[in-house]
Image 1 (cartoon, rainbow, N blue to C red):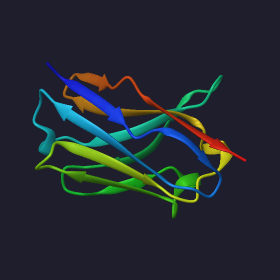
Image 2: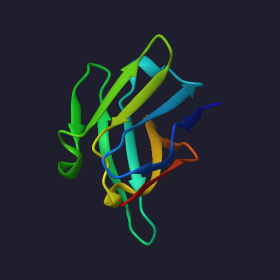
Image 3: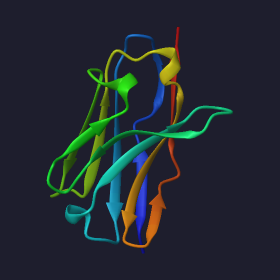
Image 4: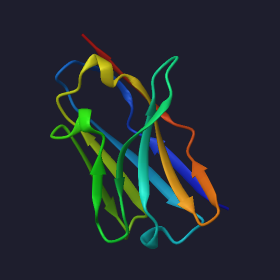
Length: 115
């Protein structure tokens, strides 16, 4: 059974940092691309960052230079280090894995950035 469990969200002031974690189980983590999405109230869910099995990384333009995605295959965990946070980063952050033929999502973790 595939499970993705996010943690690390919370309330932080603008300019602060948070580190999100997503613990994965039930599939071959090391061979799958992992992604972080976010969804602000009333808005669509956007892809924030992705990291492939080979370490190729992509970011949403607005988070480049501030966010860093990484993975630890020994722990089946993907991370999102978020620095210099802005109020517009406020959203529920979701972990995603596309196991061939089926996308899987965690329940999300709320990040609130106060001005």
